Length: 295
Length: 289
Image 1 (cartoon, each protein chain N blue to C red):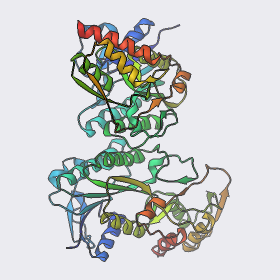
Image 2: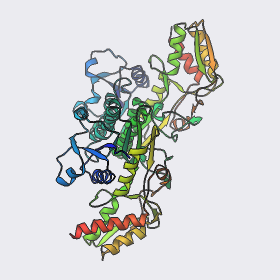
Image 3: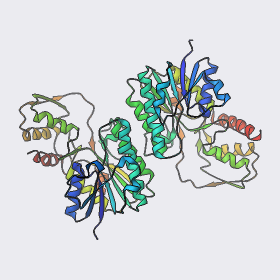
Image 4: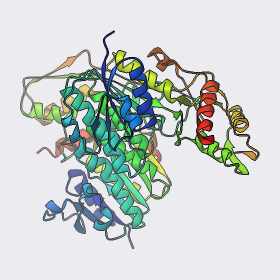
């Protein structure tokens, strides 16, 4: 197999690095873009790093190399609605238009479950429709719409990611609970103990899927949610976390304000996702995360 | 004191219709226009102020309080970034400024373009959205921002189909009118037997927007409006044909996607008083002469 040339945006993120490792392992040529200065670990993963701030996508004009595919990981998670729209919505639009102008045939975009807004179904699938979402989810959904409008010129796929776990991933509710447990907080509040949970994916699993799509994806436009298989009750996950951290405090199960949902990973599996079991995802995450905390 | 309402986009045909309605109802009104158009005469408003919605710092531009805002300003043409800046983010900035000024309610003119390609036979507030135009994405963004701020300001987004009246918008009926008035020999349309109701007269919409502006409601609501179904599309077009002295011929095509009508239930529950489709067109053609 001839190695592919892939451009990865957002190289400083954990997921960007996992994608870099995966590409390197398979012998592909990976370039990356980054908004900030990078350390040696990241530099070693990529052949070349291009400076790019997606809030000012004019920097794309400086990238001269040709690529077979783009894996678009870069995104803004905080700050104002305006900034998130500029980076996630308009930045993705500019990246896609640049890809078209450079005859790059394929773009894989990491999106988020936040696009769905307030979910009112028990299981989110590829057919679940989008509802009003918060400014972050909206900015990701705008990117989906813009990519869809370019579908005749650029094949793109939006991977709607749930909580990504790996080493030091901080942004989801399980990692907050884990922090509280390691800090031996006396009381931790959680909701929906019986709820069957699979809204979690390991960064390496997601990275492999993104690389697979970057090399194979054919259709004009698709969007799929991802997660793990074999949903297990949330109480069991909390139990595993509790014993892994030797937590001595008390878990309080309180009434929930939001409706829980799980994810139908079938459509993603059809596109080549090779999911782990939820229990395995959790165990791998706990092993990695706790090793790091102990070190 | 009668309610005092701020109307953005006051110089548009819809904005003027809202101004006329506010005046005839006895409410006080302030219209906003772009600062570059401040000299414009808009006698239907008590006063006119400049408001450049795309600037983002609306807190500094909006210096007074109001009982409600009717937000009709939007940009239909231009690059993607510009549409989002004015129509999407401009709405967010306006809502934040309104919250700062203690304005309790915002009535937003949205569009059925947020739905994108409709695959159901009837459009309602529950129909899935997937905007396919930059304008539709920007309108959807505006709705999301209002939805997100609903704890601080209550708002409604009224999703309008083709507006007929003095406004010239690039919708299906306007295209038909242009072709007829240019006496193009053959005009093509499809679904002759469809009970078409994807139309609203600007005065009907203005009346409803004013009603919503003074009706107390909590949270955020979004729903479509339209006309009552009465006649088939074929009859609507022959009516327009006569009104424009059209000499050519309308040819009905077989294909095109399935037509859809608009479910008015949510709007009716909030006091919407629709015209029939034929009456909407009749009032529109009346203004042609």
